[in-house]
Amino acid sequence: MMTTATTTAASFTIGQLAREFDITARTLRFYEDKGLIAPRRRGRQRIYSRRDRARLKLILQGKRVGFALSEIKEMLDLYDLRDGQETQMRVSLQRFRERIAGLERQRHEIDQAIDDLNRTCTVIEDLLKERTGV
Image (tube, rainbow, N blue to C red; front, top):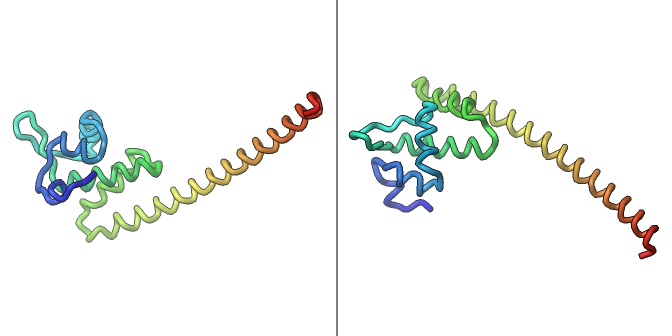
């Protein structure tokens, strides 16, 4: 759960972000290794900026809806183009619509599978009733 102190801070430690987003420090280091976030260093300590926190939030949202890390990185990197985020918004919108279409296809396939299984259960129940008389 986010606190006001956490969301208004200028910088964050690895532990603070891990707790806030309910992820492990290892996950944060992994995202850093993949170039998704880039904390500055104070000795061996990682110091995350508001930008890193915002990127982390977007990374986790992207993963939750099924984007690959490479896709998330590509969309996040478009922010750095300095074109007022127009390219990022256009590309993201296109990717979001494609993901929605894919999820809708999956939902249809899942609905069909559930219907098939329900019909099969009904057939098996009827067969069992015939054999047992119950």
